[in-house]
Length: 400
Ligand code: C5P
Image (cartoon, rainbow, N blue to C red):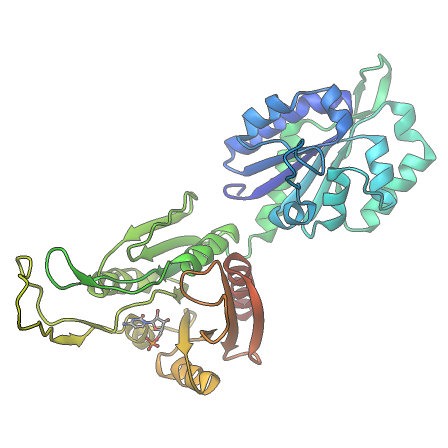
């Protein structure tokens, strides 16, 4: 359940900071991606080196990175995380969180995070019982944050009472429950085609296109993050994805992509056809490298199979197909026509007229046209954000 999830761990200045090392270890073992932010005081209790080594990521503490002039962007960190876990959460940090103070990187990240926030208080029993601590905690819970309650037991001060941070295993188990409920595509199978196709002319040459595959890979990743089991069929790209519930099949030609897509489609719940499949291929492939001649060369092209249209023909009730359209004129009308002719449930209209959109870029600008909604225009954004929007709409549609 935690595989591929992005967990941002905030560590504050409490003796329980030593338990953060175990927490990171458990999260990494569960295949979560972990980044750690420490408050300046946390460094008195545990070294950044320990947490950086265990999390396999640099540990961030200040707003800037030494004298490098590099800024640690708290907004980006907050957007990156699927969950922010503050463990241990000291009385001081809880008080600042409750009142919107942001005089360190962790607090600024908390204030700008859009994800679920968990906090595991750790303090001595009198601090825990104090009216102001309890008021701060109630306020934080009323804002939608979730507390992993401290336990009763022996405290670092030698006193016995409430205030001991919950054990790392318990925090992980809370995250498990949270993500199982949030995994809205659990049990669903998704098929994604991505990248270009290469149509062989001879053993060393081909007809291809500039598709990078970035959009399709981002969609596959987002499906996996929502709990789906993903089969990504990719044409030749430089990209890779190491997420346990994504299987990648690499192909070259449209025929190969077509064969695999047709084979896996019957067991698929959602198919997203984002590959830039060549419409034509050479009628024959020369078995030897074609020699240079003075008279030029004519290559006869024949039609490739239309993968999306063929899947649309065998689509059954309950299956949901998404296509892409790259149009240069009468954009919306042409995309709507394609939505019907290929039996898509949703079509993503790419606009090539906008700078930064389309092939090869990290950004895109699209309009999502679904059978169930009014068209939704998404302004220029990162392809990962577009993938998140697209998957969100697919989820709404299939649960509608
Ligand atoms: O007809 P057109 O090529 O514009 O359609 C684009 C959509 O159809 C995309 O979703 C693309 O992945 C898919 N397609 C396909 N097989 C083809 C051509 C396009 O799956 N041979």
